[in-house]
Amino acid sequence: MIVRAKLCAALQRAGLLDQVPATVWTTPWVVHAQPAGDGARVLDYLARYLFRVAISNSRLEHVDDQQVTFRYRDNRTQAIRRTTLSGVEFLRRFLQHVLPRRCTQVRYYGLWSATRRADLDHARTLLEVERAPAPLAQSPAPPMPAPDGPSVAALVCPLCHIGTLTLVAILRPHRKVPP
Image (tube, rainbow, N blue to C red; front, side):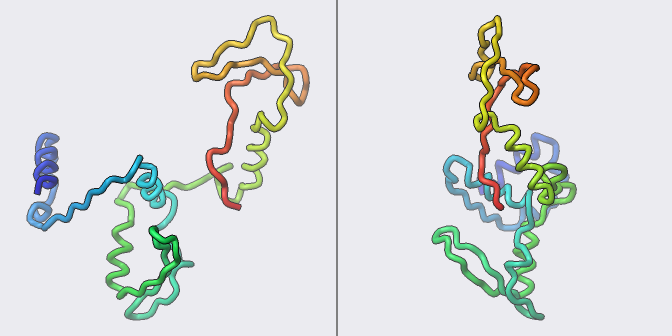
């Protein structure tokens, strides 16, 4: 009741209350709130729907006129489980995960496309400064500290050995990329 009243008051203050159907306020609400740690797990959960559909075809094991059987991973035990639902219940659950109108899924193009993985890996190796550090160039001015912390040093270009490069940051992979 408190959540519903607070939401209603907030919509009233924003001038949006008239856009909400009246049935919203007469339907019983079930509000389940529990701590989600530092939010990383919640972000991971929500991000899945921006990058892919709720359930892939490969997880569907059996579909007939009445029932749908599919696989899922139990979050507590990490075991693969199977469940069978009526077709209507499966569709009801699936449609809860469909993004609202005008909210689009993230699509990858260019180097981020799955078909360009080799090019992306090549670009990452070219950008890895740590793998083949270049010697410091003879510079009259000492290295200056960068605004975000590490010092900026002038480096000789490892390809042409003529130009100078300015090291701003070392790019490290932030996650493992699946093969």
